[in-house]
Length: 258
Ligand code: PEP
Image (cartoon, rainbow, N blue to C red; front, side, top):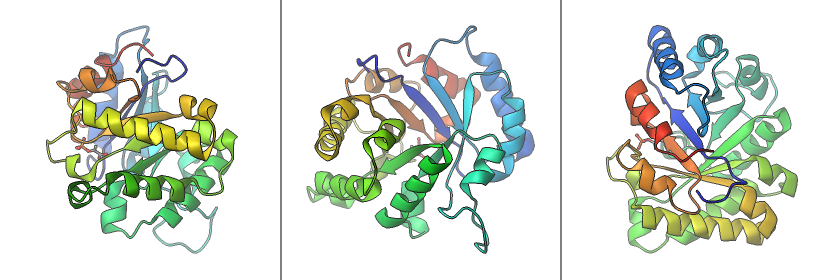
């Protein structure tokens, strides 16, 4: 991360793990384990919905921010099982993940619904972390860039330049999520540069320089330094390794000062 305009972000996606007690214990351990005063990257934890309020309470006074794992695009109404932007804000969230590959794979998420969620998040003043990434089959059939272009263009349809500045893009190759196989720093950098050029094409060079593009897929304490040192990698979205305070703090500390 060499551009001072972009403060690195380390986000921990807890997925469908941890209940209330474990969630509070984890964030307390995280807050206690950070150096003080803390001057590193922006830090975000993304617990299950049921734990958001207690985690928000436990995070008071710490630099760690809170995000939801998804949101619905409507403000309220007859949408059983869904969660609104207002629910997330009410529970203390500042950020929200949108279009995670597990939502795309198992729950019918499409580029069109990602676009609706993204607009709703921006309207509510939440920072969207929009996930894109190719499957192994797509990579092996040389479709990586085509897939990423379709996902990015679809997600950003109809957005204004000011909106683009706020959002974070998470490049998460599906073949690297939860598999222990991470993209090499060079592979990830090449894709991040492609995404940044695409953003410049869709908007402007200035905006593209400001948007944070983080990498996700088997990020661990022993690979974060090289990944985060790449020019267009502005942090990481961490799954498995965010469930241990020790490894998440090592990842946070592996990123150069924000
Ligand atoms: C993720 O869930 O976004 C992720 C990157 O998971 P993992 O770090 O476990 O591969």
